[in-house]
Structures are given as structure tokens and as C-alpha cells.
Length: 76
Length: 426
Image (tube, rainbow over all chains, first blue to last red):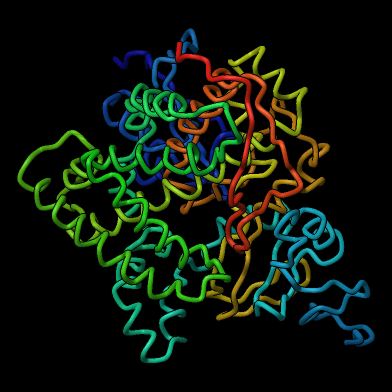
């Protein structure tokens, strides 16, 4: 039985500067488009500590972790 | 050059009809470069500047794309070294050794490894922890101001603030604070290329030697203790088993110290300048201080410190019908891009409530300014506090203002202001 994921990753592409730090930190979740801006490849995650670390690496705070049901921002 | 009939190849060099000269540092263009940049954008957006032997790229989309294009190299040190003659190379050797360790001059894969380690030590969270201390330093500097005569807000405030903050963040004791100002000045003269200072090489070399020697001592202390400061975090940063070497920590500290100094000072100076010249915007910000975040983004866009970013072409490519060849130099011009009417509505207007913050004032791509979060926090606290605590802020003699005659940055030499009184810190 697989539980419904509680967390979702969100990327604000208007804030993304294309540094690729998130991709280096968490290549499963993050990728980039042809122009070098962030794409969320897998938006449901379970390993929250590793994801938080990846979110911390973004110098423009373009990434957040939200509640999968309510969309409430949980981090940062 | 007359285009050949039926030619399908892109133009080699400039063959425009409008005559555009190539002075980038004439008195007029140092004072106000924007009309010239607009002219380039309209008539020759990818221009070969013969005077500087460089391509000058001015449209937003082109500059943004080039910042993220790995065919453009950030390694300006290797070619610079290759071009110097023996004597000069020797004199500048140590400066260049340190500079070549800077992230800003590195390409992948070296850049990737180094940036990741440094980024771990210097996150938005790191900076947020310093917010309270930055407010204290800002308030102390404002406490020292007096309303009797005109005050140079650059020298008395915008200049010392970022130096004090980054020195404290790194772990430099307050008693050694003043030493840094001198060294940073000397190195700044070389990197920002103040053309009117002929002895800049010697002073940069001496400044760098003293700074590195001082920081080596500080680093030695940090290697034997787990200090809760930025140098400590750099020493502790790990990516699996990888860590920064002592030389890399040193080079990065010099970069942070230097980068945290001149550019943030310039941003604070130009923000005050812009506000005083736009009383409606100043009034809006005083009435609603909560818009300081967007306001700082607009100051960065409108007249930010990053004028030109230099890149070397590693692999030939075409842009706007021009052939840009391997080995050539490119000037990316954020100052021009940030006022490109193709990208920003009414670009020459200062609008603190503008909701489009995609300016290129911090660059973009893998070299996006590491210190951006710190610059944002410092400038935000600085501007909020200045306008709150110095009522009647004005520039008595705007005609006499001078900008630094430098290619890469836009920076006021001084900004003499008057104000009614100094309000106590809240």
C-alpha cells in the first residue's frame, strides 16, 4: 500500500536565475529546460530533509515545499 | 563594408549605416550611459567595439541568454596572464594567483564543484541570521552623522557598511576592521579597472599580499576551532568527502570581502540618488515601508552597480546575425538590458511598485551573484533606515556629482547630502 504523498515541491520560475544549484543538490526532483531555468521533474517527495537541503541552495528562494492537499507553504 | 548581393552568411562586423562611436568612458557616458546603450540596442544590438576589441551586447534577451551560455567562458585571468609581459606578470603574480581561485573567473567543472561548496556556506538562511546585526551596524553609522553641513553618504555610510558586515561575517575581529578598507580599495582599483589610476597594479599587488597574509592567520585559527562564522562554515563545508582547500577558502574570503564591499556600496549610493530625484517614489516608500523588497529590485534594475560583465568566447556562435568567434571578448551589459523597452514597460521610469523583477543586476545562470541575498538585505535595511532617520534628505548640488570612470561598474564617487536632523533609532 502506498500512502498519499503529503508534500509537494513548487518552483517559482519568475524568481529562478538559472544557477542550477537545485539540480546539483537533488537531480531526481529538479531539472532545467532548454534555457537553463528550473523544472520540477518529480513534485511529490518523501525524503524531506534532503529536499530542504536542496531548497536552501537556491540563492533566489525560487523553491518551496508545500502541503500536497492545502498548498500551504511549509518550507522555507 | 558593403553587403554582398544575395549573401546568406551573417555579417562579419559592423555594416550599419548609423554612425555610432565606441567610447564607453567619455565624461558624458560615465555620467549617464543609458542613452548610448539605447542607441546600441536599437541600431546595433551586437556591436563590435573596435576601441575595446570586444563585442558589446545590449538587448535583454541576448544578455540573459549569454549569461547562461557555456560557450562563453568566465576565465578572464588566463588570457590576461598570457598577454602580459614578463615584468608585469611577476609583479601581479600573487594577485592573479588569488583571482584565478575566484569563482567568478572559473568555468565548469571547476566552477561547479567550488560554487556548490561555497554556496553551502553562504545561503539565504545564513544571511537572514545576520539581519539583526546588520540593523545595528546601520544604526551605529547613522548615529554618527550630523546635520550641520553636507555629509558624503557614500564615504560615511554606504562605503563602510558592507565592509564592516562582511568582515564580521567572516570572523574578522572589529579591531582589525580598518585594515580591510585600505586593502579592499587597492584590489578594487585593479578589478574594477579605474583607468585614471596609473599605479593601480602596484597597489593591488601590495594590498592583496597583505590581505592574504592576514587571512591566512585567521584561517589557521579557524582550522583549530569550530567557529560559528562564515569562514568557519567555509572550512566545514562538505560535498560527500570533498571540501575546500585552504587556498580555496582564502581566495573565496577575499572574493566575499571584496565583492561584498564595492558593489553593495554602489547600490546603496545609487538608490539614495534615485530616491532623492523621485520625490513621489520616496514619499511612497516612506508611507509604506513594506515595499522595500520590490523597491530594492527596482533600484537594481533602474541604476544598479553591474554595468558590464566580461566573457571570453570559447566556441564560436551567431547572435543577431553576427559571427562571434572563439577567442574574442564579449561585454554583456546588464545596465542596458535592464532598460530594454522590449522587456520592461516604460524602462526609464523608476517605479518601486513594478512587479517585474527579472532584471539582470545580479547576472544569471551559474555565475549568478553569490552575494545577492546579502546585498538585498543590506541595501533594504540601509535604505529603510536612512529615509526613516534622516528627514528632509536632499542632494544640495546634483550637478557636481561624479561617477567612477569604470567600465564594469556604475558607482558614485561621492554623494553629498543634506538633511534636517538625525532621528534616534527606533
